[in-house]
Image 1 (cartoon, rainbow, N blue to C red):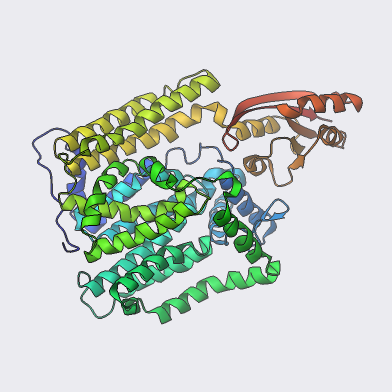
Image 2 (image 1 turned 120 degrees about the vertical axis):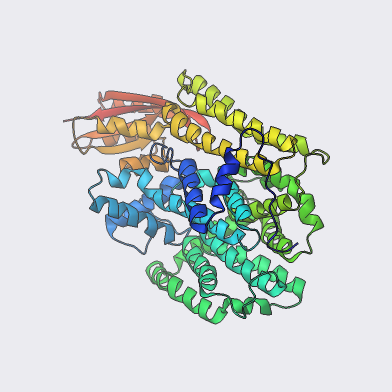
Length: 576
């Protein structure tokens, strides 16, 4: 099979042809295809971008460090309160600080504590990753198949989540997919199924090297890893690495050096080399040697959660596995497998696991799924095919039941605003299963994507805003904002989440004992201390011993996402 395999179109005499009509419209031009993909991304990624609270712990750590760049004007060193944050390079912090700084210049109120502004680089990165998946898929599929592959990736759960989080992973994915598309074209040209020109076009070469360079600035060695492993394996397979020469490594390495060297030299000088000791010696090696920050999981964990993270495409991707193995000698399939399998195995071996680590592999999985579709390999008559495809219904049903139960247990309410869309997503997912059972796999993929376009607004846009139990830090910050004094000194005893630091301010004091909390309240001026329930008795005893009678100005109970437990806090104020 060549890289221009035909993607079959379903019969049009039956109901629910909406996904087919959208696909048909997308195939008329590249501009229309890109416009439809951007529209899909906005539907899946925008709801909840501002209303979703800062998600502990990683997201507010990134946002707070970017905020401190704006506060100090230091664009080289990365800090969280008084501590150096030498875990990742500077790229994401520059991007976040640029958008927040621009918003401030335009007069956006409270820009520095508006988490949605810090998420804009992730939103753009996720949209860019989808469009670059479309560009990459055109090396393997005709336009209709490339649109569907990009849409399948854009609709997946893990990308939808990362698009809403002010972290590195959505931008990193965009960089990785840019390099993926360039490397794929270099390989397919060597194999005789890509461009016939003696040299790759400049756009393709620049996409590869810019993806590599900006990826290094965002997350260090990860994009070189994603590209290096398949390049090595394919070179061993072909007996030569000369095919990489069309990427013009002399030009590319020089361009990469120009982009990445200035900051790395600056941070080396500023930190005295401490950045590398922390980033490599502590952050990276701790993940390789053990479960860093309680994120340990055994080998096979990524494969298990894949059916949730890559929903709605995971079940269809699983059905594509026999096709991929049977056609592993085909140059296009060989490249896709080389991109996916070695890195996936490596991540399964590493003890520290988070679902988004394998995100840059998912565009290749989507393309491979569409190659299987084009070859007629996604057929309901295969053994176990209908049962496997039925997994597409589990995620919307599980989220509908789980969110309803959580809201009732913690807030004694039901997410009535989101229930209609949640139920609609369940129904459309069931239709996707039915379409597959009728022998219409492309229709099933389209309906699965449509189900995701309903589920994302239902969960993030309509349901999560009304679940107050999840919003512990914003509710605590609201108590501070309601005080009669405008700029109180604030401290916290027991509750140490980064989201709280981000919303309250860099000077938030973290206390360790009830005596420290009582001493804090004895200071001058307007003061506010938050006391977690575990420390309440000790604080009361110390306050009485010190002759204090602080005013209890509010209480907050909720669910701490990071700790996975209920928390109860009281706020005590001393106001002049």
